[in-house]
Length: 338
Image (cartoon, rainbow, N blue to C red; front, side):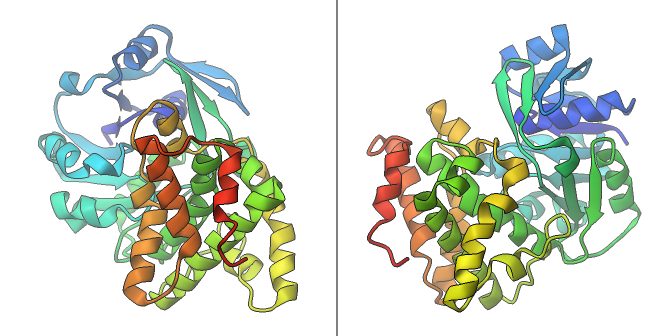
């Protein structure tokens, strides 16, 4: 398959390097001229839990030519309609867009390219762009996986072809209940990416500090309650049934889930949310596509989401200068029910 990674920042650079390392064709495309220039000149340098340099084919959007069988979409959802309309002329008639964006992006993608040409992929690892051409893999190398699927759960030849490309990096699980897998990732992102952005810290910081862990636990509980009301069965993550581990009714199970949280995120403790990386650069982030989605579903279904609401409020406050990302922001949750 002729493959492009569009929006090849931190995650896309890591993925592209692994695909290229396997000897498979892939184009890494990004608007960041300094990043693309560094990739062209020196290759992709992947650091962190691994360390290697891989020559890659890197392009600016205006350098794109021809048709792609697979476009892996890694831009921010804020610009989906504009980006997808730009990409349509480069997508083969039987080509597919595989969105690796956070939240529940498949609907907005399918509205532009059609459901037949839409796939989704949840990413169970993290990365940070350290400098042009250098991306840090922040998850342990033995904990990497993708969850791949279609909106209707259909399994076809094209899905297997995309799976083969992604397996150049790590294990790929075909999800029959793909939207359930999406909610699994949304639950994790809402809790740990949301609090990472609020606090200006890593996933580990959010899970290991007891005051912020209370927030993470409540965010997770809200996600589980909302998804259950929506009739969605949340899928296990890397073989672990996170609902069974982290849902609770009584005090004992609640306390047990609280103790489990740092262990559950241990292999991803160094991960810094992409939302925080955006805030650090003075950019708007995807909070409305992550915690905001939980809030919207909760409102529609009559399920209270005070912790997710507060995360959205604080992050928007950081964007407009009312707050700064800081560990002290955890105090802003103090009046919410524990």
